Length: 288
View 1 (cartoon, rainbow, N blue to C red):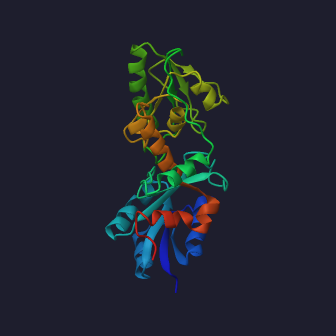
View 2: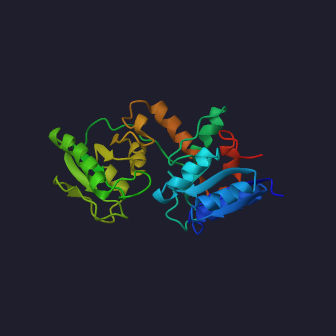
């Protein structure tokens, strides 16, 4: 008999992070019950096997909405994987970069346990630097950061995403800022429609754009986190996990957030070994 069971929800079994998670369950003595079609009949059959401690999936897609609700009603925690925050995986097949893992949602941020020094060490191991906030001396350039329409991180259509970005950009335009739009590499078609803006050339690095920006605008893009690390404040939607530190007013709060994010992301090697599940078990009782 397995020590426990876990449901693999959704048709994402070929993604490296999902395969690694399945291996991690097995490493801890568990059995994975795949439910790729998200059907309630299949979920009922899986739950009937007994001792299902949690489910896991990749992203928060509409096609899993009913299944997520059913699991919540059945009292089964859902762990959500996706691309990470620092040195993040480049895509579904990347086994070297980092992937986020959270409880019940995307962009879950790990609580802070005892042992603050050890907690900071994981962030420091990434060898990232946190720049001092920009104090002037730059032209008033507002960097507008595009995202991929329909991404489960925000769920907006292209129209909804552009409308939000344009409203924020218009306020900055009235305040004397020059607008520069940076398209997401996976959504080059997304552009500001009602406002004129410079366009960052394809292939130009985000770091180069941030080096010339006095401020950035992002709905909830991970690129906004890069801006904060570079000392550039961000105007963002409240759904961004960094919204509470986006004005760079409290360096201590920002560092604390960065430390917590470092414990909210894992490599495939770590997922395969089961360590992330032991970590999550501190906050949701998912293991025997």
